[in-house]
Image (cartoon, rainbow, N blue to C red; front, top):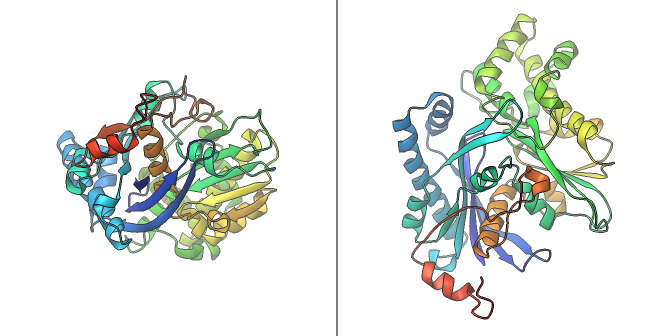
Length: 395
């Protein structure tokens, strides 16, 4: 099947849209990205999203839901056209949407989660059957609703003989610990490690009066001196010692937290470079500490994806802190910028074929379930006819 995966992460700066070709069934499922684009949000829209996440009124959330649907549809159509395809060539769209809230209770359970980006608008503008809202079904059966990337990692990225950690560093960091293919008894585990780029990016916006949204190439961090005493205090945040499964987001590691940290850093007499250097080291150290606390065994390889892998300071720190081979996902043939778009294309594929898209060992769910909501497009009947198996009465 040819499926467009759509993803917008906690940074809320753009939509990743990937035309993916997926075939087979687990455990022999195959998937690759045929073409991908990054579709930037219009000027001011990121701020609108982040403001609504912090204190959005119901009318604003309603309007943003439909506006996001239009933007996600435009992103899908851009990826299709620039890849040399037509909408008729696409079987499905798998849309993650934009996360606005993720309610984690004091005991660590997730009681609700909200992703916006109206799928009816996506299906109507593209004519393509759309599967969306993947996380809520996992939450409904007691799971964290994240990280759903772990299921794709389990299917696609296991090493023949070595344990791998597949680490995404977006706004929030998340990891999947994968047993090798030669291990038929161990199960994977996955959880959010803590802040990825969220605190760094928010601090950069504040320190540059909005002129820089992130620390390009880690340049400011590289010129700063880490405040080790402050770093140790930051690492005492209670989230880090909570046992998996666990998830977090901008509700915790927020722009407000970043503002408080910038203010605290300046009170300590740190210059801007030292503040960013300390926050950058916090990201890397919290990831390394999570491995030391929660990895089920020695990890042989760490595979990095997400925007954080483009920060050479983070890469160097992780290489020094983790006793394993640290690689970019691009080095093993996986486009690290568009991996999560591929994930949601893959999840759409599995949902369409009535197969579960979560693993309870990853999310803490009580059982494996089929994920997502199906919104029929113009191709809906042809899609059913093309994938229905009358002999088994299943797709």
